[in-house]
Image 1 (spheres, rainbow, N blue to C red):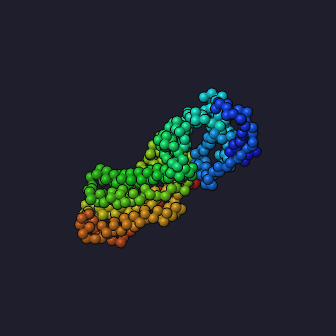
Image 2: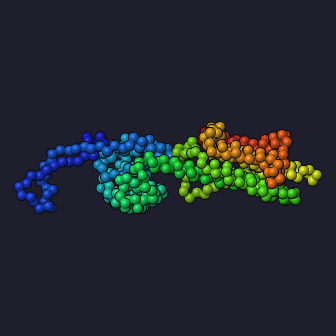
Image 3: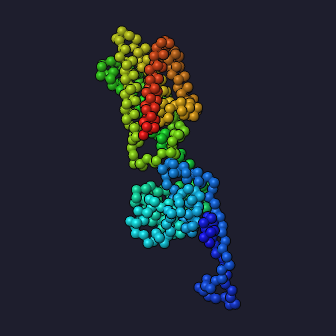
Length: 400
């Protein structure tokens, strides 16, 4: 029996009992004659081991809770890379532990065998009391209490019972553990892109706000026409920001620990970046605004500020595609929708500058090659300073 169990097989005993007259039902399972043992294998899918390794790299701890024999559970856990044979608790052992002792054990034990549904609920509660966020998988009626108690209940869509599916938050359509890991990666990518979207939008708007406030304080004319502000918001906060929201996952998305669920969306530098990058953009625009002269061409002055702001938003969106990697590391073609929108935005802005009908509508004038070069050069500065900041962050990370 132990040899079969240590090979990861589920062991069943086969026995019989002869009788002449059929005994009462309550007496059937007595005085049985053992015939032998059978070992059956229910192997994990090939991709599960890699998925568990990905979880561990991502700071997610995989725990096995099974009704199988301890030797079988230990063997399978070892094959999957979950735990060694020493880190194992059985149902009877859990019964003998106090609440405090079980809470102390759950941080080091990753395999539980011969457990009942009540034990599963106790393990979930103990993990939660230790400050962990628990995702529980299950398929049976008896798994429902633990699925309901956990922060994220995951039921099996193929083999799962209706009760388990109702108690769960998520139902897997393919009953594959690797799908959970893929969902975690997708969720992290979505959350990162939400932060990038907010960071990009607020940074650009902060730059607009600073230049308008500073110019008004100096009692100078408005640097931007209302239609020009709406145009920048359309192409930047509209098309460019939406294209940024489909950015592929970061290179380290599954090689970092989970973030605190209650952290602010502006945590880990997002709020600070919005302030300082917005200030930098605002001072670039204000530098152009200082060239104002009462005798100068007011339309040309506004067109210079307007064009620099529009082009700088293109550089900003390219720089903010990654929180840590350079644009040259992730590649221009890794987000083709964004690249297409960048070219479209640039083309539309050029039309606004050089098509007479649009010039009259937006209050712009055609820029000379020199003035256009100044606008493009100043707009590139935003891209450069953000890339330098990320380079410094990577250098500090390697040093640490």
